[in-house]
Length: 527
Image (cartoon, rainbow, N blue to C red):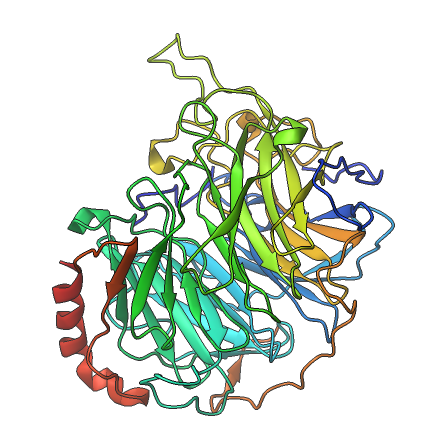
């Protein structure tokens, strides 16, 4: 099912001392941030002896509800509602399991997205046998509404991503949303390319998917797998970042709600092995912040780089290597969160030891020296639109991992416990909240412990990504008409790569009648 990762992964709370921060040199007028971290509850192992629940939390995602102060955290099969954060002490928070029963039955890939304009949270599980299941909640997991379709017909191979966004002001070929103010998008890596589908009824059903780009296995320039899709909160423009294109970074952009896409190369970029690239969009100015793992180090690895675009990806400026002044030489799992005008943050885990972070002991190759770096969580901030960045160590007393962090999928011999990505959102004060799997929950475990503890790191002081620290919540949306369940392409010059959508999509459940046609069309596009 998944060529880029292990599907199944084979603990204790941290010390209560504050997480101090170590600044880098880039200029900013804000005070240094302070952070706290909160680990999930320990769980009994399953009948096969495998970790589960909050002890098996690779590739987590989260959403913060400013109306309630709750955080929903999803990883593996479980969804947790986390609240009662003590901002003066580590590990003082309440984790409540609010897993929707059907969504929690099995998993190949989990993903969570909270719509920032409605506070509706979508949870989506890629199934082991193919296809996805989806549900959403308007009350932080007390009740769920199950979607009729978890994604579009014919697309669901791997690594799905979900997001919401406004209808485009012009050029939108789709019907206006029904019973919900925004479109819901579902995109997957389908081995030979990337594809996205749109829902016009709040995520209950999805229309026929359209191709974003052709992948390397089909002769295209880009990896079929990609980072998480994001939207411009002002006009609904969509952004999807592939895992590298011909050794560089390219960002695909749609201005017509996923019907057509154009790829823009980031000049001077390289393609390292840090995991999926990340993008986010400023809510006031539409500035695009793009972060990726570079190849500026040794052994094909390097620091996280970030660049900014103010014209929807057409041109890029201020490419910056983050954390060099702190001695960071390699990184993993970049994530971006953009706030008000000029304000954004990038988080990643980084290490200060040269070498190949993918190397682990190999009985067949005794001369291989395993990687010995120690990994901390870092957060970099800009308050001037990406001209300067300042980087801080968010976990200086408590490493996230000791030893290799392998990003080579099923070829990894060890160090695969953290999987492929972390997540980050902004709370009501403009502070970042980060979801990660902690490979060293007490700060002492090495990678051989294979730990992946559900962890939230919250900023509790310092620079805010909002000019005004508290945002006014939006009223809850009308509930979609379904019963709630369960409590709780040739490449032109100039660095662009246009693609064309399929024929005009048909709305609603009428799509089900087109199953054969849709699948045939999908095969023609991706073959």
